[in-house]
Structure formats: C-alpha cells, structure tokens
Length: 384
Figure 1 (cartoon, rainbow, N blue to C red):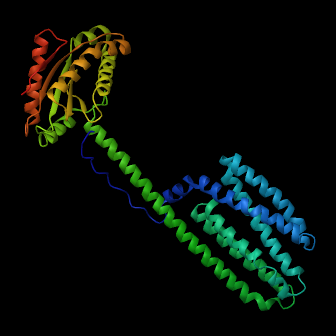
Figure 2 (spheres, one colour):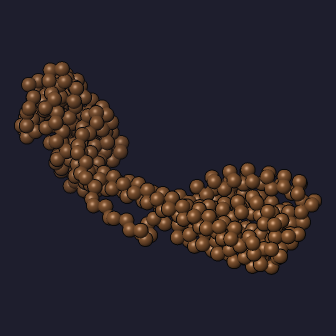
Figure 3 (tube, rainbow, N blue to C red):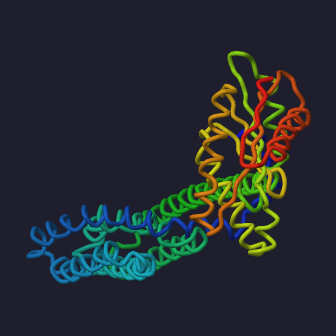
C-alpha cells in the first residue's frame, strides 16, 4: 500500500450567522428528510382522521364537511411524496400554507359557534392547539431556517389576532384572552427552540461539508505531489520517500526488492506513430505493471519511459520472477491495447538497510543498462 503524508487542508473560512451556505446545506438534504418524516406522519395520521370522521362526523358538522376533502388531499400528497419526490418540497409548502389557513378558520369557527366561551375554548383542546404546534415544526422541514421562522411568526400572529377577535365576539370570551396570549408565548418559545436547533444542525452540516471538501482538496494536493500526471502511478518524489521508508525497515526477515525497467526503442514509437501513441504506450505499461505486482507494491514512473517497482517483503528470487513475467506480458498487452509491440529491459536488486534512495537507484539503473547493452528485452540481476 502506498505510504505518504497527506498535506494539510487549506484554511477554512469562518461561518457567520447569516452565511447563505447554512441554508444551502439545509436545502441539500431537505427532500429526502421531508419525505421520510411526512410519509411516516401520513401513514399514522390518515387512519386517525378517518376514525375521527367515522366517530365524530355524524354529530360534528365541521368534521363531516372539512375532514373528508382533507383525507383526499392528504392521499394525493402522499402520492406526490412517494412518486414525485422532485415536487415534494414545493407541494409541501403549498400544503402547509393551506392547512394552516384551514386550521385558523376552524379555530375561529369553533370559538364563535359554541354555546358559550368556555365550551368554545375547550373545543380547541387538544386537536386545534396541537395541530398549530405541529405546523410550526413542519415549517422547519419545508423551509430554510429564516423562512421557517417567518412562517412561525405568522402563525403566532394570525392565531393571536384571529383568536382574540373570535373571543371578543362571544359573551365571556374576554376572560380567555390571557390564556390565548399564554398559548401564543408558548408557541413562540417552541418556534425559537426549533430555530436554534435548526441553525445548530445547519452549522453542523456545513462543518461536515467543509471537512469533506478539505479532505478532498488534501487528497487532490497529495495526488498532484505524489502521482505521475500521465500514467497515474507514483512519481519520483513518491518513489524516493518509499525507498527511504523501506530502507529503515529492510532486514533478512523483511527483504525489499527494487525493479527498474526501461522501454526499448521507445523513441521510435514517438517518431513513427506520434506522441499521442507514445503516451498511450506509457499508460498501458503502467496499467500492466500495476496488475502484475501485488497490491502492497509501489509502481513509479521516474523518467520518460523508465519505471521502478518497489516490492516490500519480496525475496530476490521472487523479484526476478516478477520481472520475467512483466517482461513476457508487456509486448502482447501493449500490442493488444495500442497496436504496436514494445519490449523492456530490466534490472533487479535487493535494497540494503539504511541505503539512500539515490544509491539503490544508481545500482539498479546500472543493471538495467547492462540489460540494454546485452541485447535488450531481458532481465539483469544482482543478489547484493
């Protein structure tokens, strides 16, 4: 496995309280969260509404007239959530606005149509008042935090004004104005608490997004520093770091082999077929070498057509076998992929304890040169 120290991420900008990225993070995950929460709510709520219609519909005109169309609408809403997720947010906002308006009308109707103020006030518990709290909560699912707060403020204002007007229009209703204001304060407290939680969640989401971006940038910077731009294998800098690391850990029980190979007559490929074909040859060679070696070995490109393989835990004999195998498969693999065959000359050595990277590369390069002089397309080795 390649070893290297990742460069640290760049500076991260500070998030202000009005940073628009907070709402962007909220909106990014809104649809999926909204669908899960509301689908569960509808699955639980629709049977309950139907039960209320069956039980209270015959005696309560409001339930008998308003709830059946509401069931139909909510069934359509559930279909949109399940089958048209791209429209879930927009449809949810329209639905929330519509139901909030209906709920206020129902509240006013119950207060004004009751026999007295006490009966009207009692009829608002628990369905009407609990529903308004739920609507404030749902507002933080379908809107960003700012608009959700505006929605909550609107609900509080409309409920307070409409409720006060309705109470004042019935005898004895003024006695319940203080209770209405208490409920409005309670609703404000719930809205503010939800607002704080929503902002905290948005900030956490932004922090995670910034961390992920910093990690991605760090990986990109590492790739730029340690990978060859053309072939995607390690570059010379990464190779030197790997050799330096392995030289500190090499031992008779943990041998490290170094294979150096150079493509034969590569200049002719560029001259006869062009540099685009030459680049294709190099990328194919890198791919083939990466497949032949083990996962923990390092393949690096150190020059135009020169490659090095560092194989930790590999004996000299095994390294020679790997070199011979790679030498044998390269012509056919490159010919199949590119349309032109090419051979390579190899040098193989064992890394010495504490040996500098330059020293081992000099040794193995000399052996590769002997393979060139000896006729190319061969492996030259030295056990020491």
